[in-house]
Length: 158
Image (cartoon, rainbow, N blue to C red; front, side, top):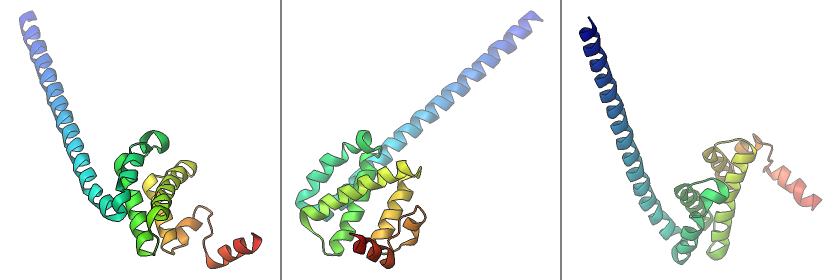
C-alpha cells in the first residue's frame, strides 16, 4: 500500500513539474513574441516619424525615449501619437518647429488627459485627434467645448 501511494505521489509530482515547465515555456515564448512584435512596430512607426518630421525626426526620437518615465506612455506610443498629429498638422499647413512642438505638446496632453480623466491613453488621444479634425462631441464628453459658439465666447472673453 505504501509503495503504491509513493508511486502515485511521485507520478503526481512529475505531472505537476511537467505542467509548470510547459507553462513557463509558453510564458517565455509569449514574452519573446511580444518583444519581437514591439521591435517590429517600432521600426514601422520610425518610417512614419522620418517622413512626417524629416530633419527633425531625431528630436522626436530623443523625446520619445523619455516619455515612459515622464508621461507613462511607451516610446512606440509617443512616436505613433506625435507622427499622427504631425501628419494632420502638416496637411493643414503647419510645418517646421511649430508642427514638431505642437505634435509633442498634444501627445503629452493626451497622456495628461488620460491620467486626469482616468481614461485609456488611446481614448484620450482619439478625443484630441477628433477635436483637431473638427469633431466636437468626443471632447464635449469630458467637458471641453470646441464648438464654434464656445470658441467665439472664449475669444470674446479674452
